[in-house]
Amino acid sequence: MISLHTINEIFKENECNTLSIKTKMLYLNILTHHFMDLRATTENQSAFSLLIKDIPNFKIWHDNFKALESKNLVSICDNSVHFLNAWGQHIDRSKLDVEEKENNNRYEEYKKILHDSQSMLELSMMKHKLSKPRIFKLIDEFIKEQEAFFTLYNSERECVKHFHFWIAHNLDKTSSDKVKSQSKILGKQ
Image (cartoon, rainbow, N blue to C red; front, side, top):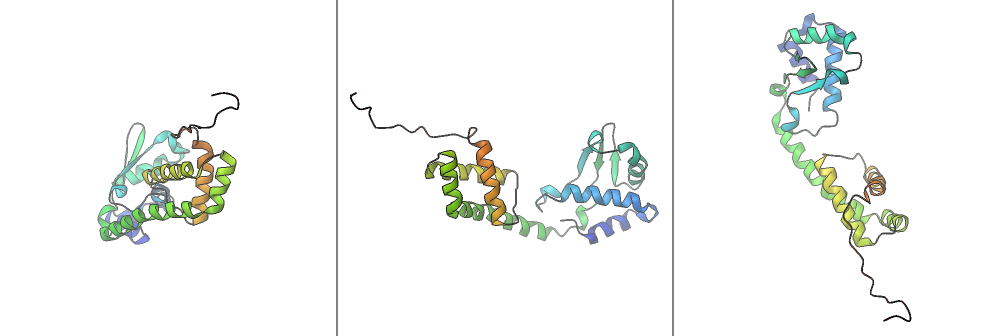
């Protein structure tokens, strides 16, 4: 989403050549940390705020934030630092749309991967005493949750592993089907 070209344009446009390397690195590190796990969508490229209490050693960095504020890159409030959207006009929006379409298709792939992972299905059935239809319902819930949080995986293995740990922690929190046994105790009618 934000490239080195984008950062260069931000610094050029806001006449940041007088900023110290330390101040530029602070800005770059915060942008990198913020955008690292976000999907490349139009919504996710907007301005954002950080609470001062969440910034480690804010007092040490205060002068650097003030320098960024003087260049209209941030706005320091009583309890937060607001990062103004200086990058939006430097981003190729056509790439945002393509990335968003690609990510939407990945959740169907994840679902197929989980459905096709025979060893994971058997392990879950054995370990949690679940039926196959119940596991498929849990997979559906898992996929919906990951889609809501925009979770993307680097490999099939990572997706399967996350589901394995997710199922252990969410089994009691998800809806379950009541199994009604038709069997009768011997000697009773």
